[in-house]
Image (cartoon, rainbow, N blue to C red; front, side):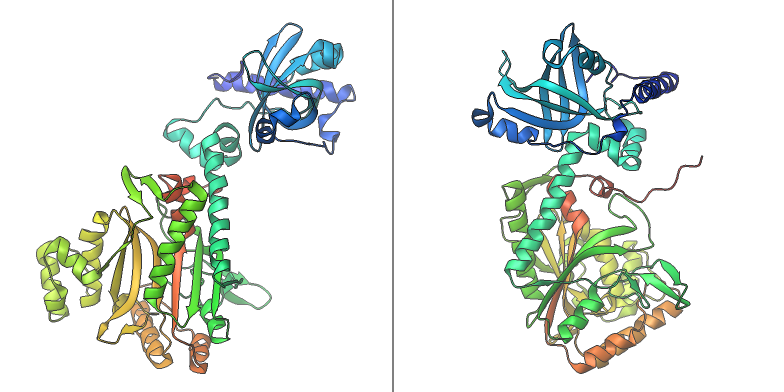
Length: 497
């Protein structure tokens, strides 16, 4: 970058910071405090100037941004400033802006925010630039910008100081711009299909809709404990009962669980519910949404992730959990008589289980152990055991299984969907079983939600529901390794003073 952007020792950094503060103090004493400037009229951004050069050549523009580099060459200099859309070079001459302002410009530091007014031209090397007539310091940077982040230590610093990451790493800015576009395209896709976007409570008296440990807080006025929501599901299904036939929400949910490259305690979830359809309808809408969003954001359905070439434009495979386990282990759970036999086979295969686990739980453990990692191309795993699907409608012909699917790509789950359980009697029995699990040590099991049961008693039409983790979807379309790369401010343990 510039002369300041080199590897500096901590002592040198402290000295640089001291010098910057002294420069600020001198400007303030001279009555030129940049922090007293309240606005600057920007007329164009860097990409607009490049895209419309023929129309803007020799015409005045006003640009503003962060000073990222400068080359002082006696009475004239070149500098690059970075705005929201990229870099723009400017030619700054003492003859054009005056001796006093040029002397001030030469003292500006990398990282300062400046405004430039001038005309658009091309240099002898053909680079589109702005010939400055006026340069104004709009904000003084008191910290030295790093040249770049690299290595494990600096990777963590990128997450802790995202503002610096966004300044110096264009690829990071690009990731979050794409994230915004992905969410916009999801909304556009669902709105076009007649879905209504709604908002539901973040604070709840009963956390439900998923198997997860909630965060607990306390409402002082009501003097009750409340929970940060772990899913969006139950309030949205209440709206289906109320007559909203197609609803969705994109919102933050919170789960008091571990942190990994795929998990952050707070993350963004999209859930939708559509009356008069089932999980097959949800498969269709999921496949179409993934394909459409990729095409509109990336311009292609062909992507690379984890070293694998994927094409979201091809039909997604559909396979039952039982058949998938049989394919990769040779064990056919349709032929396993009961829980006792399932546990015996699990012990033989080295699959760890708990005493409370029953046959359906052990089938799922086999799937997680032997199958997930092998699901590279987009694949719907369908028909989950009823024991791990407390909110899902049973399959009429195989009541020990449910009409549920999860979407897997490169060994990771990207979506979870059901034919929603709308039988209040069956739902109560499922909740009671979940309560039994809680009493026996499973703190992620569902609680009984009496109001939701009352809602179902008023009658909910046959309904399909879908949940998609937005963060993982963004990881997929931006080829990001960690969920922290796609969350602007990921959860971090504070650094002790």
